[in-house]
Length: 537
Ligand code: FAD
Image 1 (cartoon, protein in one colour):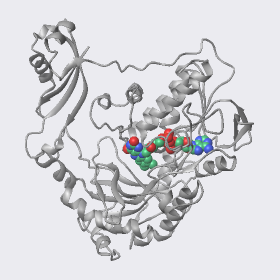
Image 2 (image 1 turned 90 degrees about the horizontal axis):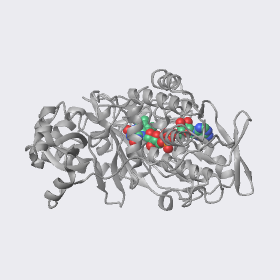
Image 3 (image 1 turned 90 degrees about the vertical axis):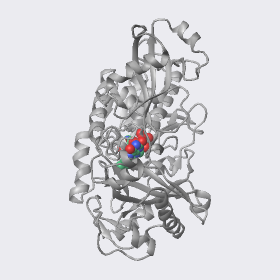
Image 4 (image 1 turned 180 degrees about the vertical axis):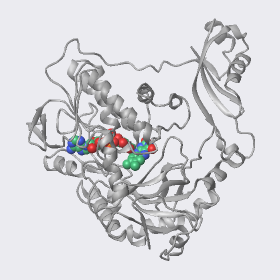
């Protein structure tokens, strides 16, 4: 198989135009091209006012690859396709007595469990929340009826935190073993659209993600795994420095010397339990801010120029950074084109925002977090849980500012920049449910963060025309941008001071986003499988 890169075709080209373009580019007869597949398709949005082509990377099977590669040896856009197929670490010849445990069934836990199941190790998955259908009903209970179920919500339950999301499936992590490809392939096998394998910024949207998650659960069970819901792990069984198993809230004990801990960033009670048990944790940086909403059409025009609304491009996204004069960095986070702002608390009497969209991304508004990076050294010195405590304080205060009924505090961008409370909405209707209570957002975050965001919004308006639109709406507050703790692990991917405990994914501080959490789940499962099967690295 050879790989051809940088083949450009106009946005509106028909599918049939690809084959003759390849044949012409390689200088071969049509009959010599046996098969081809699109490995990647991207476009360069910077060319919005000129011609904006699709740029393809293609894998091609030709009749005489050796001769063709020799003829095109000087062409840097033609070469052998790298082998990126997934290589399992090994497989149990017969069922072992010990079964590994996976705590948490978000993307990290799902992929850890799948890899362990594919290795014949029959994992037991313990998830505190409910299965995805019931969880969806409970989550809508907060959004529509102001009723929160602390064990079944946006953060907790089958599929983890990203289930009600935009389902963006890209990441900037280093991935030398191409585990990200394995994640996408398994998603497609479970029902995700095939295009996620090749478009440059794939997304899957919330409705499709729920179906994918349920299918993957059935696959894990079919391979001998067990997936248990409403099973909160509340303690660990430890003998010397070796983990022996876990204790459930019900009091049931499950023994295993291999436990993957894929908790997510919101399992604050479990972080406290780990700290009380002496497991090494450290506070880590995260970010705080607001969600901002604009009309999607404004973002499309600014980003895509004359191609705004082009059906092959869909709703436009953006990514922004501003280094403020007070030394803080402000950046856009988890941008959701054509989506909605969601209530994302898992705890009573707290308010926290996030964003989601459907696959179609056709809601009226674009939203993104506009957040400021904070660090333990500068902003929350203290013990390993100081970041958790700061999040709790800010989210509780946001609940009060929102009127103590899960509505979120909000303010128009124009008023926020002027430092005046908002009293009425303008042209942009906020999408957050249960609702937005207008007022002054300044008391909701530390002064340095407010100052930095005030400075950043007009600066962003220079990069995206209209970004500082006076009627755009800020909804507060965004605090769960990443985990406030790291559960430190060594090169063997086990806790630094508790053998057999494999901290993994976002909650442990080793991932940020669906794809990277899935990749970390695979890495950790491979380490568990090697240990259980007695294999060398
Ligand atoms: P999680 O997904 O948080 O899963 C952890 C699981 O562990 C949960 O299901 C929880 O119930 C369970 N658990 C916790 N404690 C216990 C316990 N003691 N016992 C048993 N079970 C336990 N990322 C993207 O890449 N793209 C996006 O578009 C995107 N949008 C998002 C939108 C929203 C609304 C939210 C909230 C997040 C979004 N994210 C997005 C972030 C993404 O969801 C997370 O990065 C990812 O889910 C982390 O995966 P994880 O498996 O490490 O943790």
